[in-house]
Image (cartoon, rainbow, N blue to C red; front, top):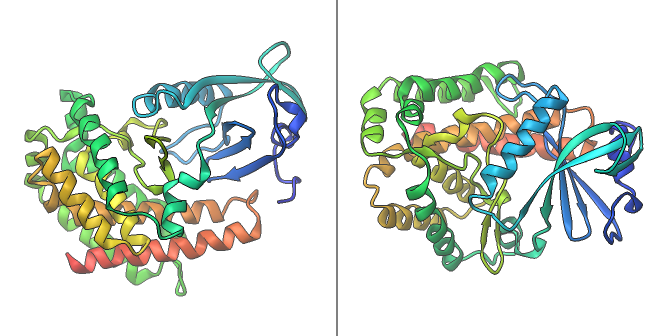
Length: 339
């Protein structure tokens, strides 16, 4: 992509000489909230100075705090991947890590995982199978069993608390509705009506609280954040807002099940849910599945819209995100219609 829309420090980090370890080539990947630089054996992640309300990276201090949270929380599932928070110092494009000079930005340094073993790559190659799903379940079941639970965390499982997250999505996407998509008026009204009908059934959410299923979860559990290497690495959890991570375990696993549906792997998604529910002895999970699948698909559609609206994103990426958003909204619609 062209460098003109990038912050000066990112332009500086696109040069291999900016690093104190061997780097042949630097590759930049963008999300709606992050700049991710793949440099040699390491990955450096920097947060964009954005404020979406539910996420606030608008000041350097807030970005530093979220970097520290990101390292701490992700070490639960990836203790060997997250190396720590780095300080970027210098001025304009002349930047370096740590040492002397004014702090320009804070970032997270990670070990670079093998790209050919990323779950999305295995899906694209048609190589994802039940053994991979089983390995993921074997990691997730003990993770959730040991994840923090408290009376405070339980409050995030009430219908009222879940409604804050779900209804917020509709408020934030209202201005994106159009006759031609990616989000149409008919989809918006159908999905929002379905979500409200489930949220009105408070007893469903109370039963999940009584069953002890509200935990400090991952919050962003889908194929883009899983590497199936010599061991399963599940990374990039939500660190910027506790209310997206304090949730029903069903919400977390529904995300991955939805993602498998999105990639045309509904059979593997069903296997994932059956195996997880069995090992976790979670008989009530199935009753919440479509609701949380619908919610997660809508969130992914929203993120596609946000990314496409970022002026720093190149045209090809913008179009890809709009197309993906349309698919996610159609998937959310299918869950609402099925329910």
